[in-house]
Amino acid sequence: MGFTHGIHELGGDCFAYLQPDGGWGWSNAGLVVGDGRSLLIDTLFDLRLTAAMLDEMAPITSGAPIGTLVNTHANGDHCYGNREVRDRWAAVDIVASRATAEEIPAVPPEMLAALNDAPGDVGDLFRSFFGAFEFDGIELELPTTTFDGRYTIDVGGRAVELIEVGPAHTAGDTIAHVPDAKTVYTGDILFIGGTPIVWAGPLSNWVAACDLMLGMDIETVVPGHGPLTDKNGVREVREYLALVDAEASGCHAAGIDAFDAAREIGARIGADERFAEWGEFGRIAVNVDAVYRSLDPAYESPDVVEQFRRMAELERA
Image (cartoon, helix red, strand yellow):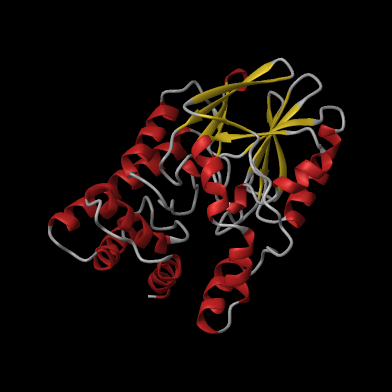
């Protein structure tokens, strides 16, 4: 199955909605269909994109309305479109981990709209990442049901198991497992063909999440970004994270500045055939910062503008 835009049938009444090329903001979503009801996993980065996705899903959801929406984590490209779902299905239950629900308001759409509209270098920087998206006029629609740990949802007679694996990528990451279809929707616990980014950490939690999935009886894996995969994709992400954790820990012990360490580690990773073709390799700057924070609670990462500036600098080098 190729990495093409739109809805893909996975079998077992499970679907994935994919957005190439899987880079910044181009996230995936999922749909699980039961007897007369559906569950949507994540929305997209703006209302326009989410509306187009829901329109494409309409032949399926017309007979199985969306009764539950799961937000796997708090990044806007997985939850900014919630209002579009609420407008179509007023009674929809929006489910997320408690940590995700608390984190969603931290980066409101107005913030990204302002950064995209900023004058000078800051605006140029953020438009290079997010200029394709329309953040004006988005109102956050927050989760109505929250959980800690694990939570099972009945979707028209079939179970979808939500498993909280964060803090990792963000403060409250969740994966959605559909046992009867041997399918898992990972949110941003998996980036396939692109470099993972560790906003929260520690990396050990993320490695543990990969180990959890590797122990599951699953055949189809829907990542938060990138093409569909299987356990091989999970293993590759695990290998990257374990490598970064070990390399950055060594640099920290040697007293090397975090950004200098990111340059050194990034160069070694770029020469590693396992990861050399991955996009967004500048994210190593944020990932090393996450390791340094986990090793030293007093370590302070730079502000978000500087983090994006550093990522852009590494990718221009």
